[in-house]
Image (cartoon, rainbow, N blue to C red; front, side, top):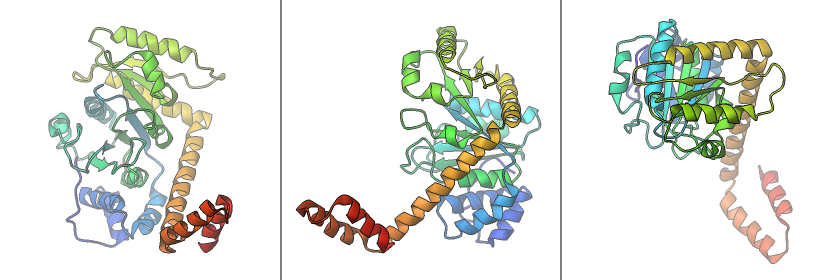
Amino acid sequence: MTRTGGARGLPDAPVETLVERARSGDPRSVARLISLVEDASPRLPDITAALVPYAGHAQIVGITGPPGVGKSTTTSMLVAALRRQDSRVGVLAVDPTSPFSGGALLGDRVRMQEHAVDAEVFIRSMATRGHLGGLAWATPQALRVLDAAGCDVILVETVGVGQSEVEIAGLADTTLVLLAPGMGDGIQAAKAGILEVGDIYVVNKADREGAHQVVRDLRNMLALADRPEGAWRPPIIETVATSGEGLDKVAAEIDRHRDWMTGSGELDARRRRRAREEIEAIAVTSLREKFESVHADVRLDALAESVVRGDLDPYAAADSIIAAL
């Protein structure tokens, strides 16, 4: 595979052919499949059906944290650390605006230049397109494409973390939360939901003043968590991403977390939850499309007027809409 993907100009080919080529490591076929996923192609159900038998092997690692902590540089250096382990690596960088808008990771190609000639690394940016949660709506399907294409580890860099941007914890097998000195105190981190989603905590820019205080605050807050016997205890790792310091240790902790999840059954449990949420999302989307196909706006206006007049209660109105589906 190659580093960056963009294959909207690739002539359409049968889904089976694209999947076969993607599995053999053809980067244009991988990119084309992800483009079809992003564009919500009518062929999406066929693509998913063709990919499922070959997916489920890659470890998915989410990378999140407040803006400015060095997620992009950390991701690039973590790719290098994983390649030293001889892992084939996929990267999905979620951009808050457009698929190729110059986001921190992919727009600034200089940061990923060391991987430009590595055939075992595939990098793709995706747009959130207004989707809350810090992820693009098509991310689960894009992950399946990279998984089926033979990636051992897939890194997902989100647009940031906040009150509504912790979906990565439900999508990833392992979630890395990045913090850095000068990014706010520990209480603010807790408010943002950071302490609820992390499996591994990385304090980047550890060569700056205040880094040790961030580590102490994190350690104290994590100590307050009520964890049962045998539960995973998130490590805190200090890094300097610009030099790569500490990233080999992060890669080792990712491996250790996977071993723990496999042994404890947590990996299967997380993947079942992920599959359940994906099924629910697809079903809700299908119902919404059917809802719109029965002239729901006109029907809703009439029902709303009946509710306002007191001729109908909201539950009965909703039941009539469901019956029409």
